[in-house]
Length: 40
Image (cartoon, rainbow, N blue to C red; front, side, top):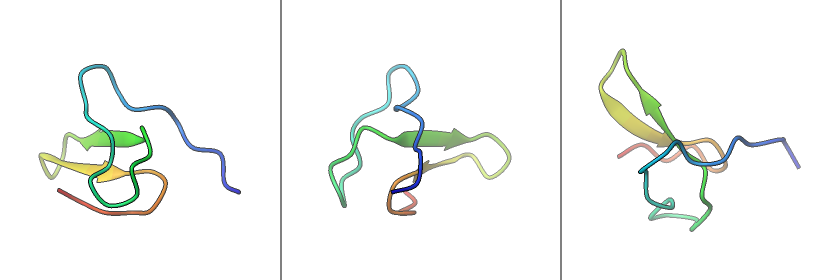
């Protein structure tokens, strides 16, 4: 599969797919999952 960065420090696992790949989007000020693309 695609290579995914681990969650940034302090971020929870993705609520949708459960992967520890949540990233912070500073521009939109939201979190997104690098694995499945869910935003929160």
